[in-house]
Length: 96
Image (cartoon, rainbow, N blue to C red; front, side):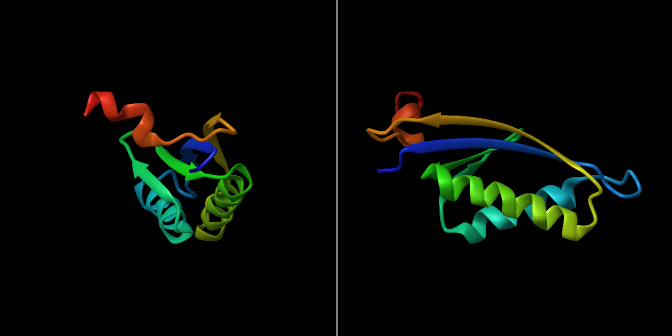
């Protein structure tokens, strides 16, 4: 079982103040390529894994956005860590 949940909302600045949806899609593509369990929500995406690998995904997301042309990125991140294990399903199953 994973020990960490990380939720991230990326807010990329775009070169010409155009819509940022394509940039957010590029960030989600990095998450998809990671092979980690994740859920996309309207305002953030939550990933499940080990802290070092989750932080590496965040770094790759920022790198991908810079490569796409974003001059700057703000990310709001929440981390829940439990050495005994934690999961998205375990925290939300009573609501489903």
